[in-house]
Image 1 (cartoon, helix red, strand yellow):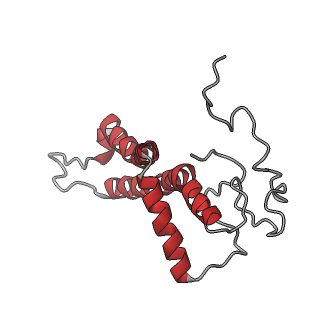
Image 2 (spheres, helix red, strand yellow):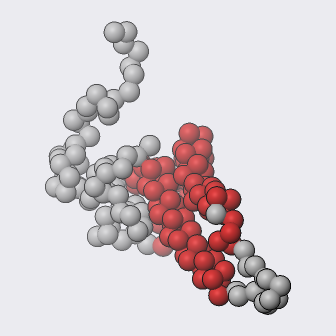
Amino acid sequence: MGTLGPAMNVLWPVFHDPSYRPAFGERLTFHWKANLRMLRHPKDIVLFSLISFAPLLLLVSFTRLFPDLFRAVSTPTNPVPNMAPLLFTTLVTFVVFLVLQHLAFVVAINLTYVPHVRSVLLDRGVPLCRRCAQLLPPHAPDSACPECGHTESLATMSDSGPHGVDA
C-alpha cells in the first residue's frame, strides 16, 4: 500500500511521470493488470471502500444532526412554504459533498491503486520511482530518484516487513 507523501496530488492521482506517454492500448493493458492485481489484495479493497464511503457517512450524519436545515415549513398564516433557504442549503450541501467525495476518491486511489499501477509498470520494464513515479534513466534504474531521492536499495525499518527473525 502507498503512503501519503509529496508525490500525492490532491486533485488527481499521479500514476506515472507525465513525460511517459504510453499508447491508449498500453494504458488500458497496464490499468487492467493493476485492477486485477488490486483485486488480489482484500486489504486494499476494504481500505478503498472505507475511504470512499466516508463522505456519504458524513452527509447522512450531517442531515441527521441538523434536520431543520433540510425542511421547508409552512405556517397557518403562510400556507406556501418559502423554498429558497431549503434549495440553497441543499445546493451548498450537494457541492460540498461532491468536493469531499472527489477528495476521498483521490486519497483512496493514491493509497490503494497507484502502487499497483507502478508495480505493473515496473514489471513491464518501465524504469520509474515507486514513490513519486519519476522516470529513471534506463541505464541506471537502481540509482536514486532525481525528484525525491528515493532508492529501492535503501530499505528502512518502516520499508521492510518481518522476515522471520525473532528479536
